[in-house]
Length: 447
Image (cartoon, rainbow, N blue to C red; front, top):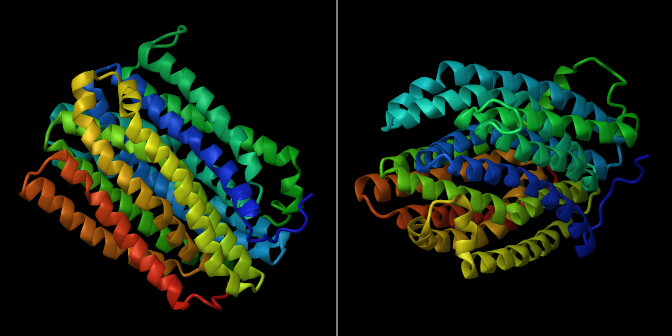
């Protein structure tokens, strides 16, 4: 039975929310790295193609994250007001919205994506490999979006301890099926590069099934009255879309721009693209704590405002920022002391490690900037002013895109200088989010 859903603002509450989220986030990153380790066994070209397929799917994944963050903010506000039935209504409507967006993503992938990918990727073999993969992988979107709706519910209602069950089952399934499908072990067909797509879809389905079983066994469906009213209310759909749409657009623009970055990298050759793919995995692993504290910032800021304790918001954000930066600093130090341990996992040899290490140094600095920048940006989300999030993202992406185009396409500088773009991104984002929160313009926003 869910009782009082209102949060306090101490370090114990911050860690109590953030650490289970970080544990749950470890698992999808294990999936990403597992895919790339097994695909690396097929050669450098497969690892290069995986960079583009991974970022392409990530575009749709972050659209789901936008829905998740918007819904999470709304749920957390209702939790701060201690209104469990309103939470159930929000969740029910969020599921239908997520499914509609998922099938729109499938339609776009089958109609527009092949044309864009063939026209922008120079290497035709890589282009066809990427297209074949994404036409399979995109069918995981409905499962993924239902999954992120679960995240919104559990994080928004302070039930983060349950997150790990679904993600753990997904990871174990993905590791087993990657090995089985890519190489044809245990009597399964040898599917090569596309085997990773089938493995990921099945793993998402398993994770989704497990977590909804957990929610059912814990009685959360009764506590929040998920199925008390089957009708869809236009006003509730409108409220979710108003809060989520700027975040969906923000995240989609961000990853589309990152896909553009990877396409420019492809123009420099398969080696640079393969190295950049490993950097994406580094961002995923080392950014786990940052994004878990970001989700905590969103939830706690919205919950505290829902309680009418607006004076505690700024001290709360500072606390979360400090803890996030501390955890990230430890991981970043390990990356810089032992870079060869991570880079050797991809099986590309000493030359690859030597080439990638300077890039890793640049990326690790960007990861530290990310650790507090995402906390402040998600605090803006927690206030409910999601249009401000979108504006911050647009300005940041204009600066980012101009930088990568000049450095990689016009001046033809090294890959290391290309990844300095992440410094531009996070410095810009933090500056604007910090200034907005300090301005106090977010106060007394009601929903």
